[in-house]
Length: 295
Ligand code: GUN
Image 1 (cartoon, helix red, strand yellow):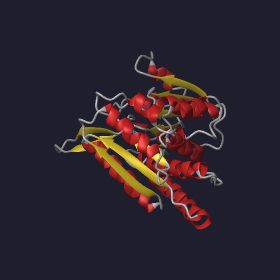
Image 2 (tube, rainbow, N blue to C red):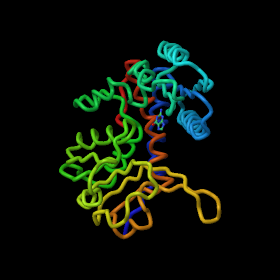
Image 3 (spheres, rainbow, N blue to C red):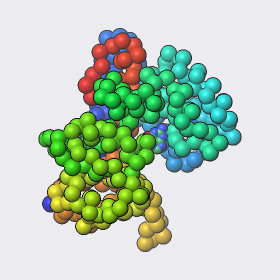
């Protein structure tokens, strides 16, 4: 039997804990954390993500702000907007939705965010803290941290486990590898140039798939009993002419082989938003010299 990991239920619990801690911060210090999402352009998927993040923040007692620049906005305009948010005391967390229009350098934009407000955990200071062992002072990238929380829920001890991370993006693959290393896993970071991925995966007690290719991982690549976290969200056409969402793992094939697997949707997605709220609360506590909850 393969267990279906309920990311939505796990995320609901984390959001409830964040909401309780935000209420406590309000009661003790009269403070409400604030999150500002910045959207550049009109990408429909990004608009949905930003809207959902705003709704989730409000539901958890976090003030939500949104800034929207046209696709034609210059890099200098975006940097000026970020400078304003860095010095705005109502804002504890700044999130610039990626991808940005091609004429804007995302790295320059991320580097301009106050690292203490970098709730995506993408700034070089937070990346460096994550890799160099200072990770309890870093803000951790939301998707990989959410994956780690789900893995901790499935495995009592991650130490010594063989973990394979598929995909080397700055948003998921690289920070996921760092987090698993910090948990004392033996980590392999595999990518599009890796040879014989199937053989590599058959050793993996933990598999995190983040390659953005629909059902790339086949059932017979999975080690029996492995815990599989599927980060992929791929839209594919269905038989009835409509479209449907599938992950990077062939979910049906994994049944009866994997020990546990996250579904798509309803797995990693809700946890990412919950971790964003968690990071905003942590950033607010640190910035304002309040004790930070362990979430
Ligand atoms: N686009 C896709 N994933 C993310 C994310 O985690 N953060 C931001 N800012 N943009 C994204």
